[in-house]
Image 1 (cartoon, rainbow, N blue to C red):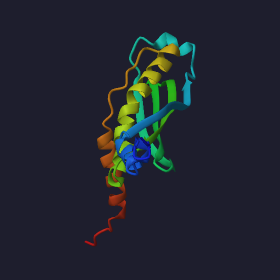
Image 2 (tube, rainbow, N blue to C red):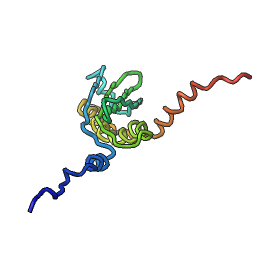
Image 3 (cartoon, rainbow, N blue to C red):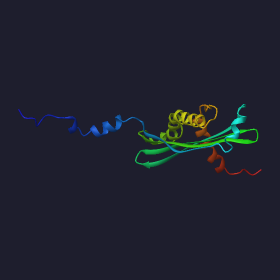
Image 4 (cartoon, rainbow, N blue to C red):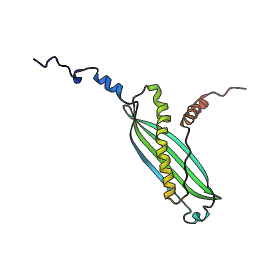
Length: 169
């Protein structure tokens, strides 16, 4: 008996298509701290005044860049500063990023990169921020969840507002 008629999975020309279809829609290949800075400009004197909560300002931004094929780099930027009375307590800046690959329809790429991926990264970034502040001798501070969908919608609305012609009166 000959093995010439035996078919294996390697003989199937549709196998490549099946492998592509079976790939997960989102793969996070790596997450990393691109940049992290914590400054406490008036240390150690400022620690005497830590009997009240500081006024904290937070700015969050998201950017995504195409790397190659279906690979992207998504960057979550967090900038925070805290003030006590008229004195800067701390300045924290962090860029937390991930290399991801997407296997989704093209029309979904932008919202996935600017909403879903940041949503996945945020708990890790929040933990790093909290630990950096505590390790810096400051009181614990937990960032509240971020509505990345609202950020995305605001981002989409801004260029439209700028492109609209001014209507004559």
